[in-house]
Length: 67
Image (cartoon, rainbow, N blue to C red):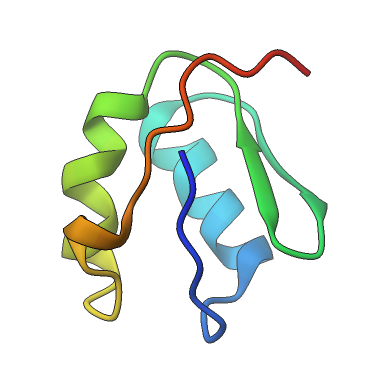
């Protein structure tokens, strides 16, 4: 999943995801958060609800990417 927004604090977002989904979530780069678990479908709805500056149409599913 990919979306690009510059005014979201990634550390705060990662902590929110970890709490919301009871999983590991960490910032792994300048513009990336890795979330452990199968939460992709929930993210499509959650992101625009939590952060109004993210339009659901601007979120891309990049498929299964193994790290």
